[in-house]
Every structure is written in structure tokens, then in C-alpha cells.
Image (cartoon, rainbow over all chains, first blue to last red):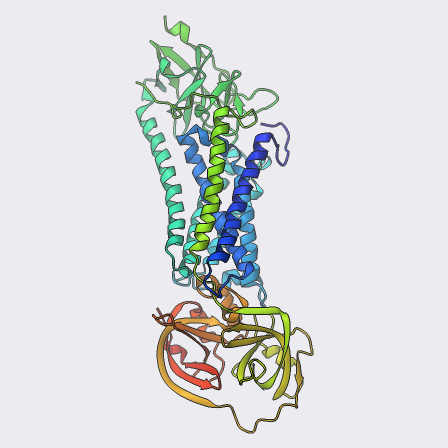
Length: 352
Length: 259
């Protein structure tokens, strides 16, 4: 959390994270280039430009695939949360790799002729009506443009000024970009390479990303189905208070697509929106530290009784009325205006 | 009603990015970093090892050469010379980018039959191309060479139907590696549209390959009708002609079938 904007607010963890990330990227590129030199048939070799172009393209797609499994993996094990915390560094790094790949491809394959490289990408091969010989470059270009917009707005300045819903919707474009890149590779290099390893690599990455999202989505849907029995006047049952560990929450479905985080702390219970104002992080998977709910994604903090960030920050989220009867927590699913102070339900009063 | 927490194993310290990283996360991240470096290096090596051959051929841009011989402008600019290995060889002429030498020849105002040309060699086996120097003196008349009183030996080798791929000669001779397939399609189309000779590359089940210059049935340049078939697997029917050491596949584009 920060009051002002800086390009990157570096700390020790972030520095180690980025250094390790780039060490892995360089390991990929170096091993690709070295092993290519060692394994080419007698008398054959890659042109250096084409070798570097491939190395950066393959590294970029591999990194993007890894980025897309971090979110669901962080829902499965909290040990992945530190990777999620600085995911945007990975995203921008993946964009840089693809930028180098795209720039080399544009100049090498579409430059050095009478028409502009950009026009050439879209028009030289116009076989858009056939799978065989499809102009796969245009798919890569579309993905690149999406990733460019994402990389350019990958900062809290844009998050604040575009508004969280729009920013989030914009950045969900990564899934479209990923699908376009899968098609780009399948209709491009996979058509040329005879080894099935390339098809397995691309399809395996796509299958892993899809499967992890489906598994974590299914887990959440089935949890929602098991919870939130309707009572009356908008009140729902959130379960026994003793099932909520201290300084933790349970998540129940609210109205529409809303989800509510019901926190137990200091002998009382409060309910707030489950969606962090920052990037819709799941607050109910966070904890209360020093009296504030701390988002598990990027550490944004909110006071549980009024949903407001502590001064000098000014984020605020919706709150909900809570009550405890016979040891069972009830929540009114009608969201109160963001930042509304709600008296917590006291556990000792409700449980003689 | 009871409910499991999503992070029901999360009983230890709580990671917050701007605070000290908990010990359990530090240990986990250290292991994950080592694993990540291994997977990254391993994936790069695996993908590299599974690549096919990038193709033979070289463009020796750093070694300028001069060749003296007999110039032909149709169907594509070429030089017949003994300057490569002492035997009469065909050397295709190209500009230094994605174009043939037609425009540069049109700009030069010299006697066209016996010449010395300068440039750099692009070679793949017995296939040779000269990327001519990018200056005004790239071609000079050379009458030290005797005038030819007869034409070059031409032979009709008969009709063939073969499967293969249409490529541009400059990239396939060695300007680019790899130089086949979908990734190279647009580049090859630009090259052929720019005046570089199209070639037909066929490889049989035994791995034997043959590359021939593509022309129309009259032996003239063939460009627009074949462009959309470039770099796709195709079947062609045409007549093969040998002119000295150059093979031409003379093709009616109506007989092109995409496979």
C-alpha cells in the first residue's frame, strides 16, 4: 500500500524475486541457444537472428503459462502467495520477451521489402479462410497488442485512475491473449517442426492452465453451495461461530455475484465484502493482523467493522450486519454503503 | 453446519509482501527458486533438442567476390560463370534484400552479355546466388571473355508430377535458416513478389531432395499465380528442363494442387 505513486517500490523480497525471475529467464534462453548449437544435424545451423527470435518467443510463452497458474495455485496452497504478490513483474517480463520476439519477427520476416512490416503482417499472407497456411502472425500481433495494453497499465496509478472494475476487466484480457498465442504457435512453428514435443508443450501448457482454473473454480462453487442457508429478511446462516478460527474468516455467497467475508477477532464477528478494492483479491482468505484485515494478495488493509483502510489510506469496501444466535453466525446479505460502521456481534454476549 | 476454510493448512505465519517474509515461505521459495531454475533451463534445452534441422546453406556476407561470366536476364537475372569451381555454373543474381536484381540491371546502362559482377555468395550445395553489391559499380562490362557463338545447352527431361513446397531461392540457398514451412510463408511471398526466383523443393521418402527453378510453361517468370501456394505442401505437374547445370520446372499454375 502506498499513498503516492512510484514506478516500483523496491524492498528486499521484491529485489530477490525479480533477480530469481530473470535468472530463470536467462537459464531458459541460454540453454535453448547452447543446446540448439549442440543438437543440429551436421552442416546445419540456425541463423543467429532466428535462433534468438525463437528463444525469446518460447521463453515468453512458457513464462506466461506459469503466470497463469499462479492464481489458482495460490488458492490451493498459501505457499504460492509470495509468487502472486509480485506477479506483475512476471507479466511485464513476459511482455518484454514477446516484444523482442515480435520486433525480430517483424523486421526479419516482414522487413527489407517495399511494404511496411506492419502492413505485411496483415496482408502479405491473406489465407484467412484456411487452417493450412493461415497467417498465424496476425494472431501473435493481436496477443501482443493486448499484452502491450496490460503491461502499459500494469501499475497502481492506472488501477486507481481507470477504476478497479475496468482495470480488472482489461487485465482479464490475458486469457484471450493466451488463447491467441496457443493458436499462433500451433499454426506457426508446430506446423513446421516434425517432433510432437512442440504440440505437447503448447497443448500441455494450455491444459494445465485450464485444469487448474476449473478445479479452483469448482472448489469455490461447491463451497458456496454448501453455505449460506437462507433465514429471513435477507439474513443467512454463516455457520457456527466456533468454526471460524480467531483472526480468520469464512466466505459465504451474498447477493448476485457478491461474496462476503465473515471475520472472527477479539471475541467478536464482523462481515465485509470479500473483494479487495485493489485487485478484487479474496479478503476472506486473508487474516487480521494488528486489528486490520490484510488482503492475501498484496497486503491491502481494512478495519473489519467499517471496511475502511487505516489512515492515511482511503480505500473502503461494503460492510454487512451480523448477529450471533445460539452460537450460529447470521449475516444480512444486503450490502451497506462502502465504509459504513457496523457494530460487531459479540461472541461472549451471544454464548453464555 | 460446518465449513472448511479454503486455506485450512495455513496455520503458520502469514505472508504480507511488504513485511518480513515468514521462515516457512522463505524455505519454500528457496526450494521453488532452485526448482524453477532447473525447469526453465530444462524446458529450454528440451525444446532446443526437439527442433528439426535449420537447413543447409550460408550467406558469406563478409567476403566480397567478383565473378565474370555471361549474363541472362530471363526468366530471372543470372550469370553463367566458371568462377566458382572451374566448371560452367549458374549463379542467380539478387539484390541485398528481398528483391531480384531486375531493378538494378535496369538502372545500369552497360553492354549486357559479358560482365563482371561483385557481391557476396549465398550457397547451398551446388546452388549458388550472388547478392550483388549495393553500389553503382556492381556490374561492369568484361570483354576479356570470348563471345559465345551458340546458346546454352538445353534439354527437355520430360513431364513429372511431384509433391513438395514452393520456396524463395534466396532464403532457401542460405539467407535464412530455417527457411521452410509456415513460419517462413509470408517472408517467401515477399521475396518472390519482389522478383527473387521461386524454387520448387521436393523430398522423397528416402530423404533425397531436389530443388528446381519454377517458371511458366514457356520458361518465363512465374509470380502472381503461385504466390498463395508458397510454403504450403503442394502437388505439381510440369516439364523439367535442364539448361547447363540449372533445372527448371515449367509449370502450368492450373495444375497446382494444395495437399
